Amino acid sequence: MQNKTILARVFLVLYTFFLIWLIVFKLNFSISGIHSVREINLIPFHYEDVEPGDIPILEAGMNLIIFIPFGYFLSRAFGNTRFFTKVFIVFLLSIGFEVIQYVLAIGASDITDIITNTVGGIAGIAIAGLTRSFVDRH
Image (cartoon, rainbow, N blue to C red; front, top):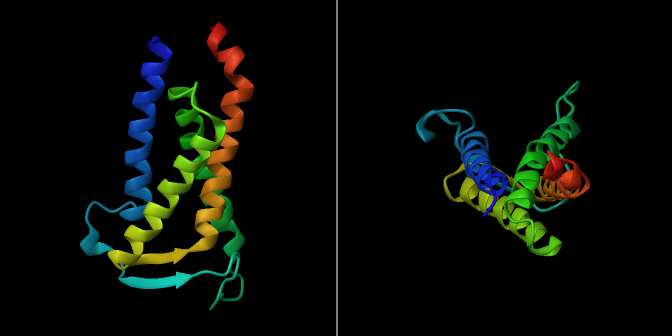
């Protein structure tokens, strides 16, 4: 196994822990400090109780952006894995986060999050594919 593959796997593990801290723990160091919420939204890009001046699409954009590195590291760590397998892994991780939020009552489980997380992961996988020849040469 190449050093770059090992390094990508290390970054993938570290970034996965970061995502857990960000999504599950809401950047806290314990669940006890997190506001208790148990909601499910199965309507994509539907936002209830939006206050004037609030931009919920910004949250969707942030979800997309935070999953780009995960998709990139996943693709670099497991380069020979089929594209749809990598997308499925991103999709399952996103669903896992939403289920954990619901079970622990620490956030709203939202289909929009699953969609935007998965699209972000796909973008990261695509970026890894586009930059593979450049990265592998250096």
